[in-house]
Structure formats: structure tokens, C-alpha cells
Length: 332
Ligand SMILES: Nc1ncnc2c1ncn2[C@@H]1O[C@H](COP(=O)(O)OP(=O)(O)OP(=O)(O)O)[C@@H](O)[C@H]1O
Image (cartoon, rainbow, N blue to C red):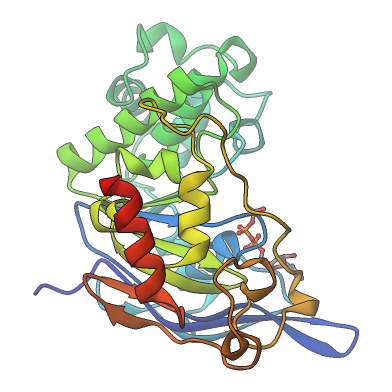
């Protein structure tokens, strides 16, 4: 097998507060291959963004990173700021949640994309960069890109703005695109169009994409593999088809059951009761145990580690029972 595009091994990120260190992310392993979309899914506070910001080395000074992060085999932890600048925006493109924070309201969209090109390429003239901006707007299927390049962000709709941000992230033909909740602020139809665009970039450019989201439904159509995060850890991972066919972790099963489905037989959606724990108060044993319908005594004291059950890696003492229930539901 070729070298993975992104290989995170045993990543732990801690934040210092009031003289103590709290782990936001603990022992995370994550692998993304070129040409695939990998979904990273979990509720707010599960550590998705912290993991991705660790890859970009954009975490605050109070963060300590342990473990290994390799891009195409090259270790990123320990690189200087100067070295990381050559990786950010060039080999890795990052799409933030809210396009308005990524766009400067005072510059035209074309100027901003051109700037993203020129910041890393001193050999590109102003004129060439403007041409490239138009080309990139065309790549992300913005109609009439020559005219659109001269407009300001407020003249774009929400979906168009997100396309412009994707164009900016693609400016230097990165190998990896990290999309952090790229469709949260958009309505469902536009969401689907943005997902289609990301999938098209994957197919045409062969890039790897990490799609960060709290919504399992978003990854369903576009990701090949996924990691489910809870309380700073990966609790389940595998191919999307396998996980959807029979989730092995009660948390994943809960996320799936709270999704609206087209062929809805169960009329009422079930949300997972309770809330994820804050980093300062993560429970002993399995971090999900206070919310888990499958909880047994063991879960209070012993934290389950990821293990292989069928085609899936899962961190749950009761994975076999959960999988059997999930499979039974599918076949009902
Ligand atoms: N700079 C920081 N200092 C202290 N704690 C932090 C810092 N940044 C993040 N955290 C904590 O780390 C945990 C994980 O946060 P993270 O933003 O990665 O979650 P997330 O899964 O991406 O959620 P969301 O979907 O809300 O962005 C949270 O409990 C958060 O409060």
C-alpha cells in the first residue's frame, strides 16, 4: 500500500488551565488516502476541530501536542512556523465553517483568491494571479466567473461564498483539503451542491478530503470512510457503508437514529439523551457511559480501547450486542 496522504498516530492535545492540563484530544489515530473523502463526525466539543487545527499547527500557545502527524510521509510536528507556512495553503487547504470569516468584506472575491495564489508564489505576476482567480472560480462552478471576480463577498449568496472559499483553498493545488463543517450555515439543497463540488474536486484533482461535521447525514453521500469522535477519542471507524449497515458503537447508533430518513418507517426521531462531557469533567471508564443505553458495570471503571469487530474498529465493551441490534433493525 502507498504512503497515506495524512497519517495521524496517537495524537494527544492538552490545554493548560488553572495550573492543570486537560486533554481535548486523546490518542487519536486517523488515516486519509489520496483521492478519498474521510468523514470525522461527532457532537460539539468532541475534538474534531482541535485535531484538524493540530494538523495545521494553528492551535493557541496553551496547547501541547503529542504524537505524530505525517503528510505524505513527512512529519509535521516539530516543524518551524516558517516550514509550516509552506505547508498551510499550499499542500493543505483549509475550509472554515463560516465563509464570512474567511473572506475580507473590503476586497473583491477575485482579489482575495489572487492574493492566496501570490502569497506562496513570488514568480506569479498580478495579472497571472487574476487570471488564475477566474479559472478557480470556474473550477468551483461559479457562473460568469470574469464578472463575479470583480464583486465583493456581500454580493454573493451563502452558497456562492462557500464556493469562493473552496476556490481559495484550492488556489495552490493542495494534496489535502480539510473542510470543517463547510455546510452548516447553508440550506439543504445548497449543502448537497457543495458536497457534490467537493466530490468533483476529489475525482478530478485526486485530492484527499477530510470532512469534519456533526451531521452523519452529510458524510453519507460523499465519504468513503469515517471516524466517529466522542470526548476527544475515536470511538468507531470504518467504511461508511459498513458503519451505516450496522453501527457497532451505541453513540454512532444514536447519531444514526437521530437522522431523518427518506423512507421513514419510524416516524419520530430519537435524539441522544444528555450532553457530551466538558474536557474538565470527563467520566472514568467509558466516556459515553452516562448516556449509554447499553451500559454495564464494567463501563463505569474500564475505558474500552479500539478493537476490531467484523469490518469495523470500535471502542465499546458491548460492540457485539450493539452490532447485532443494529443489524436486526436494518433487516426488520
Ligand atoms: N484554546 C482552547 N483552550 C482550552 N480548551 C479548548 C481550546 N480549544 C478547544 N478547547 C476544548 O477542546 C474540546 C474540543 O473542542 P473542538 O473545538 O475540537 O470540538 P469540536 O468537536 O470541533 O466541536 P465544534 O463542532 O463545536 O467545533 C472542547 O471541550 C473545547 O472546549
